Structures are given as structure tokens and as C-alpha cells.
Length: 200
Image (cartoon, rainbow, N blue to C red; front, top):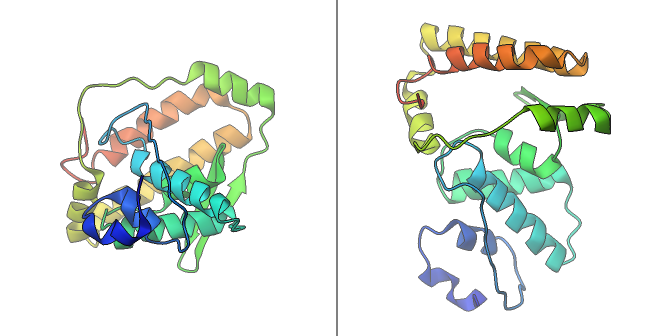
């Protein structure tokens, strides 16, 4: 049981960082279960924060939109808790489903794909995740990238990564599902060039 008045006693705990964003919380028992541990690159910390923000907002009867949940979760994880990274994981966890995120200096826009249940079932039956055994800190990778992100070589590689993401979008929208594996592989080969400690 976490008592609101004792939150100041907890340091460097992402769950506490979430609780601090909400006033008038009742006494709570919070249980966390994750299929994969930290450092797997699957956006687990962002999913955890989004789940907590969503749950706490429902307890307090707050009507937060998916965008508000994503933005508050980003603020908690990136600004309050100092975990380096981008927006993609919070957006994916907040909106759910297969979606396209478009970014600009003004913010982000989310487009839901119009896949049928049959399409989604097919993709779910042909895409697999395996635990490879290695872990790494995405926050440390992002800190390193901040030091080199203005270099021409980095910008050129990132432009290729974005262009390949557009290829993936086109393949999904046009239901060319047999192309997705090849596109993922091509994108991965480019992404590995962004920074030396991106996993093997």
C-alpha cells in the first residue's frame, strides 16, 4: 500500500513518478507484471507508465484522451524520471493497435491503419518475438546519439531509416504483407549504423 504523504521517501522509482502526477489518490495496492524484463527494446517502461497513467486517471474519473495520456506519460518518463528517448513507445501504448505516427515541429499525428480483423490475425500469426538473452539501456543509447545527431553521416542514415519506415507503411496499407520481413531487415541494417552500442 502506498500512502500519498510518503511519496517523497521514494527515490528513482518510475511508479512513484506516476503517482506524483495525480492528486487525491486513495490508498492503492499496485501489482506489476511484465512478460519481458527491462532492456529488451520492446518499450516496456513506456507501456508501464501508460498503463499506470490510464489506470490512475480512471480511478479519479478523469477523461484523458489517448494523446493526453501519451503526452503525460512522455513527461513522466522523459522529463520527470530522466529516461532518454523519443515519443514512439508512449504513442503506440496509448493508442494501441497498428498505427502510423507522423512527427513535425508542431507535434505528432496518429493515423490508424484500416486493416481488417483477418489482416491483423494474419500478421499476428506470422510475426514472432524471441528473447535473445542480451539487454541494453536505450536511455544510454539516446544519450550517445545526442552527441552525434548533427553529424552529416547520422542525418543521412536517419533519413534512410525514415524512408524505409515509409516503405513499411506503404506495404501495410497496401496489404503487401510478404514484403514486411524484408523491409524490417533492411531498416534494421540501417538502424544499427546510427550508434555503436545499438544491440547486435
